[in-house]
Image (cartoon, rainbow over all chains, first blue to last red; front, side, top):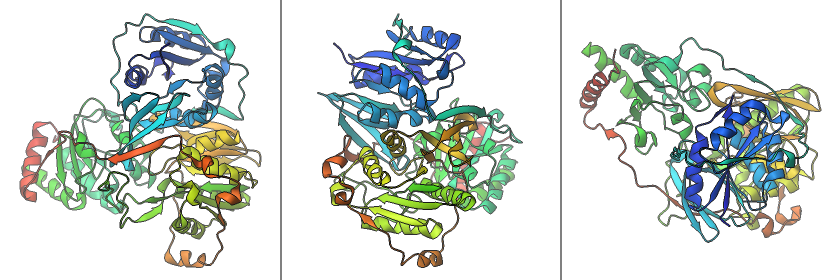
Length: 324
Length: 260
């Protein structure tokens, strides 16, 4: 029997997440012969819609319908999965806020090795799976391996694997709801508090002047605002600037902030973590200025300048003013 | 409230250029500046603020070599009441699962209501807190960026999810939470603060003290090597004098519609 790889499908209001098709590619990189099973938890019509949708891409879809799973509380989902998964299950969960909530504990409960934030797979040699991860915000990479004969929990990085768009699986839905058992947890989901709307909606900006840790001090933000003004752009930022409370949360670009789609993106003193780049869609033209020539941002930017933004930005502002 | 914060001593990526050593077995650790993992600082600050509000004790704990004591002392200078260093050669080369198993044995000797970790550390895994909670059979919530103590039995925790939204949960104690940056503003620790706690005793626990042997810390997941991937094509790097670079860049920005 071929190896079963299970892919946990994130979905919202009846629509599967982009990662739903990326996990097929990830599973096939682990084992090209694997039979890949979609795991879909939730309840009601939305759940059925997602399950039916997934049969186009997965030959087998396991459905778990439970009223308490209407919102994916990771504590309850973990219990449900432990109830239905075979002992040697290889489970893929996207490495985002839900995956981070569910997966480390799931690996303990399944007594299986955990591969977090996997960037690429080298494949199987016997039962040993070798993967590539990044450490130190992407400054170095590592090969990591473990024996997966007794199963594994793996969180592939969203956006790192091409979505499998073939949609030729013609799969079937198997209802596993009856095998789940009682679901209780002392962590109870209450509500979602929506992000506050800021004074400027950066998701609508054509040109963004984005600032990161390299600005060093709140007082220096002035040079960023002056450049944005000269360019006719809006100011956005990376996470450390919001953590320091120098700019409001609605200005933050990234997976935990806003998803933006400008034509031109100036990344100033931003190293370019995957969480930051995850908020940048629509292939903008990226200009990166960073004093560290090895900053990962230079791998994804179109044009790069190795310079200290504190010195470079005022000169650029002046250069633009002279042109006008 | 008895609060435990799990911390880690890590190379400070803002102070160092992280490079792979010549054999590819590790990063080059010569002359690295170490500090406490950035996320852990937020966790300790949160613990101190809770204690100051509702009373209790903040204990900081780490698994590491003897030099790891310096980060415990730093967090005690911030205001943590106690430190515990778990250190044993038997624990070298362990993985996240091993660290969680080691912490579990020490935690079971105490009576902690709330256990905090940073949301992630230098390896970007974000795994120890969730594993620890599962081993202790207590609830877990990751990426917590808002924390309210309701009473001595339960808390309200906000998790950072996508798009700047927040997922609110009510969680019974005891529980484990991983703390996200931005939840508070960690206080500054000066040299004088460190001196004040210099003479405080930090107990060291060995594998024997915890009743563990090396097998408890044996890694399930092994790091084979470190490497730097072949750089892709990457950005077109602008070079020359600052004037030349700016002239080129202004031209490019104009062509791409970056200047209105």
